Amino acid sequence: MNRATEATCGAPRRARLWALRPDRSGSGTITEAECTTCLEGSGAADDGRGPALWCLAHTQATGHTGFRRVRTDFFRVTAF
Ligand SMILES: [Zn+2]
Image (tube, rainbow, N blue to C red):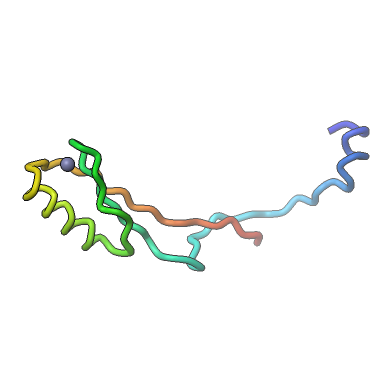
């Protein structure tokens, strides 16, 4: 950053230490299942039971047997 940029952006930021931690302020891990044949999905659920049951029902209804399980969890950056 040159002097002209510093003048237009204000005071330089102080160096801080940051950490990446699990975000416990919202929901926990979210699980979804998707059929690898037709790409239909179970929708998101707070536990894996709903998507697992959806896979079994989907196989019974369609004969499709391959699924992708997607688990999403959240992190937040916080200052030390
Ligand atoms: Zn399918």
